Length: 181
Image (cartoon, rainbow, N blue to C red):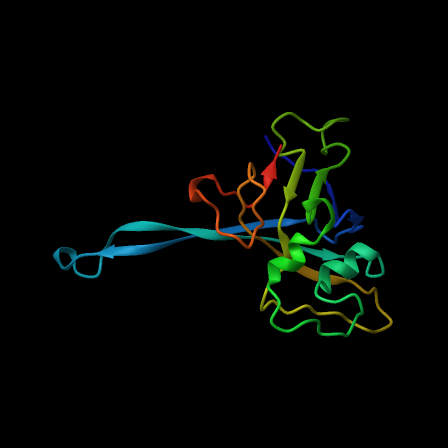
């Protein structure tokens, strides 16, 4: 079965508008390799060490409030650097309702009037998400359509606790990057 269909997104409960090609979910898992002299440089196993999760999109409606906050999260005024030395997650946890980034399947897929069963999650909620560190944000100021690419990092948290994202999860096996229903 081939699956296609659009998603809408909000950031801090404000719409992010139209995207150029939708949202891309990216994750990587990390591990320490186990190497033994018995097999030279061959990796024989790994010790699992967690991972990182990102969501990326090219936003087409530059002037929406949600878009501005997504690509300029550390200060209310475009061009101001913000408070140096602040924890990044202090900004993510201050977002209203603890739902930094929410993607919702909208309308239908290309074959059905309603979303097809198994067509992917109806909603993806990134509770602690903010513009990824060390990611360039490029904007063209010209007579062309102004759009902006963003790469948001989803930080892990334990859903059943009231612990802020900046506190280490009590049980790393219960930590998630997002919820998907």
